[in-house]
Image (tube, rainbow, N blue to C red):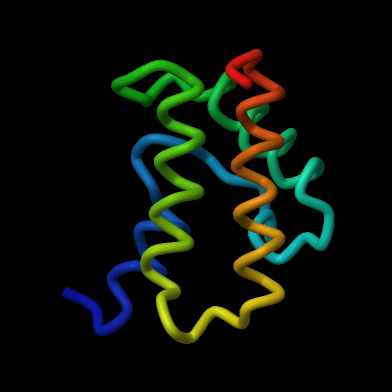
Length: 90
């Protein structure tokens, strides 16, 4: 197992083929739209598109933990709200 297993999961997830740099985008809406596109295109996911996209975003936020600056965390948390809107789950 690699030292940074969480980075490998984000990169090589068996659930979604993520757009490169999706979590480093500055706009919460574009993060949500990218995750939605990835989830809807994926043929390997085991659950619904919404659950897969939200799980990947939550996984990234949780694994970054204390190393995630507050400003980045805010953007990613807003991306969760945008993702809910994208899937009509407000």
